[in-house]
Every structure is written in C-alpha cells, then in structure tokens.
Image 1 (cartoon, rainbow, N blue to C red):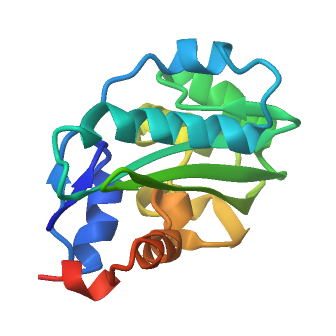
Image 2: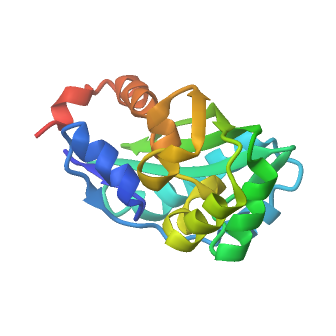
Length: 196
C-alpha cells in the first residue's frame, strides 16, 4: 500500500519525506476558480475542504488500493479567502495589507481509502511582522511567495517575516501531519506502516 499525493507542492512532498514516507506524486488539475464560484455562501473552511476533496477525487480512482491525499490552503484575512498571488505586484499589495496583522491560514485535507473519506480543515493564526517596504519588494521579487497561499512561506526567505504562529506548523507548510495521522487511524491504518 502506498500514499498518493494529489499535489505538485514541493513543501507537501518534503513534509511526507521528512516523515519517512516516499509518496506517489500525481498532481491533480481542477478548475479551482469554478469550484469556488459554485460555493458562494459556503464557510471558508468548507471551501478549502471542497478544493482538497476535488483534488483527491481527481486521482483516487487510479489508485484503488492506496491512500490518496488532497490538500488546499488559503489565507483568511478580513473575511476574504486569498490563494496564491501569482504575480510580484499582487504579492506586494497583499503583504502591504497583511503586515503587522494576524490572519488565519486554512488548510483543507481530503484523504481517500477504499471508498471511504476523511476530510478536515486546520486553522492556524499567522502573525505577520511589520515588514519594511524594501523587504516586501525584495521578497516578492525573489519569486518564492508567488505560488504560495497567502503569499508567504514559513520556511526559507519567508521565515524572516512571520513573527509567530498559533497552531500546527506542518499545516502552514501545506499538509497537517497530525490530521493525516488521524485520517489513517480512522481507516484502521497506522502512520508507521508507510515509513520506508
């Protein structure tokens, strides 16, 4: 039995590998904007969980005897969900809005095994530093935060600019290892049976 990661995120892969698991990588390609638009009144936690489930659903049928994991993260700031900024200008604008403030990173998880689902969303409070304009611009131009939910990373260059977090650090990186453990237990599986 293998663990299939329905993601191309190097951070999620790193978490699993550091946790002793060599995942099968099968990135899922879904229309995230269309799915979000179809859930206009859904709570933010339900939206990220729906995105995670759509990703896992897109690939789970290919691996009927394995465990498939889908994840999606978005930053909740002032009641608005923010995904990946994609551009330098958007990253700069986001950082100017969030610096010196606290927001919540929501990470939806959907785990599939033999027709059963375990879904859940983690919420971690992120306290952003009061970062200078020069550092915001340099960070955006580095390219690191452009494809990251909330326009930041907890590791690497982003570590300079996060004052603290309150919650699961692995969830902020992209995949809650404790939540994944609980999902495996719900299926009668153990985390250690996936270790190499």
